Length: 137
Image (cartoon, rainbow, N blue to C red; front, side, top):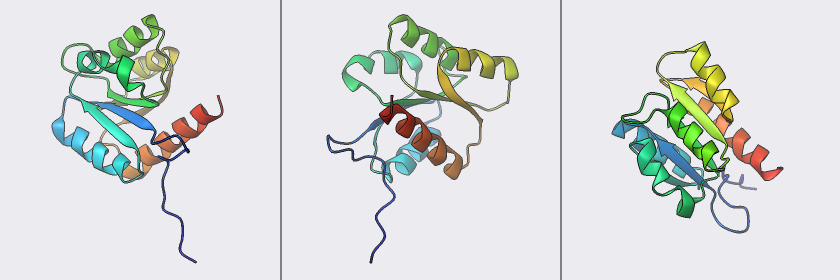
């Protein structure tokens, strides 16, 4: 018997959506390919402002954001989403581990804080956890 594909995207109503916000195009493309291989719909944005311009129609199931973005930071993005009462599970990435930033991100609803460069299996595991947790909410 053939093993079922390793997917998260199908839940009977269509694919789950992950929004990736990172100023580095290579990181956005890499995460889009990686998460797309799980049959997730992946939308990428170079800035927090760009995501905010589309968040209402996008309705992401998960957001992956870099802390240090051009313009508004990833932390400011989480603050703005909270102010708009848009609670979306988030994974925050940073090039340097910073405990105060990690704590602030968690207070703003981030479910995880990972250090870059992110290893593929780590991000896949975290996204799986976020989406499975979200299904049971």
